[in-house]
Length: 178
Ligand code: S3P
Image (cartoon, rainbow, N blue to C red; front, side, top):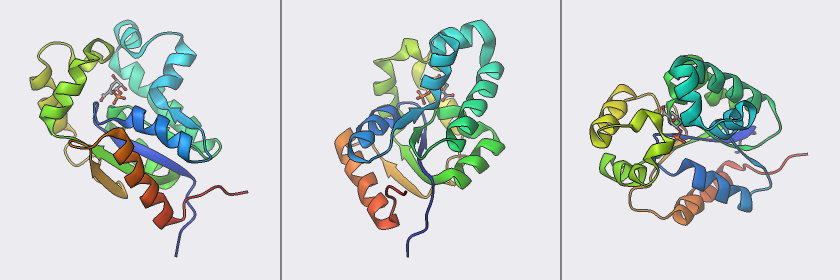
């Protein structure tokens, strides 16, 4: 039997493909794609990197929690989240209550390779990339474990990840509701 849940929410470390997958899912499902980082960027008129530089991580985390809350209260959507959203317990609880949760993972080496391509957009990865990825992964160990489904994206193309998520949605009866 399927349970009615409101949103489809994607969590996971940086470089696990959340944004690409969220965008592609919106082409397949009748819901819009929303992203906490993008919402912060739209509202503040600056990039995440600029926001970090100007206001610091604490202010970013507070803004991130506000945006998450707002998106969860809004219409049914595919919500992708910044990797650090799970640092706050209240966010983890809200996400869990807000819908079906998919956790994207990847090997640290894969994350490093992917992050290299856009290192300048990720303020927490400036400096020694591998060391930082390993440290962040360690700090967040277990924090993503509340998800309903976990997908290792290391060897998958975004399209394959999307297919797997669509199969999950079908199993759970996640569809448009009136
Ligand atoms: C962060 C991840 C980033 C962004 C910010 C902080 C993190 O989002 O929110 O740079 O703490 O893991 P992505 O996971 O989409 O890269």
